[in-house]
Length: 203
Image (cartoon, rainbow, N blue to C red; front, side, top):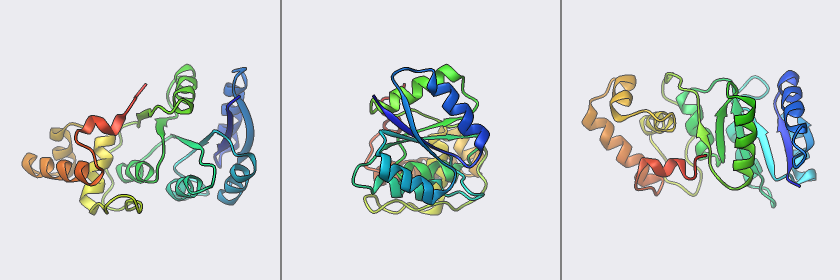
């Protein structure tokens, strides 16, 4: 039976997730954590198949750092990011940190359960709620990827929000040819040939 650890600093969110997933006879919640160090300890002890976590923990965008830590453990769990809000650079940071799926807390309960199952099956579900970019920043690529420039991280965040080139150009106040150049650079640095490759096996 697949085992799951819930990581969120809001008790009500964890309670709701536990209640929802407890109705599924083939899924088992084996741990919860509100703090980063407790999450790492729980995952290292329980070795779950899946960790559900938020982008922001303990009042800061610590999700990417936690995700990288979890992906560095001897037994690496799948990571499903469930968040109420995320700026473009935070979406980028979670992708580069190795998150397997990324969804919005506003999705319907049955869709969330389907996302949990899809992620456990090794499929990527990446459906962030569109948010306007809030400036440059965010995390860099991990050691397996070339570093993206700050502008390229912004572009990647918007690509992950399924924005078209024209929408990216408007959001970042850039010309369309410039956007196309940035998109090509992002895909090349990630080892991809098409933007659809960002969404492999989307459910």
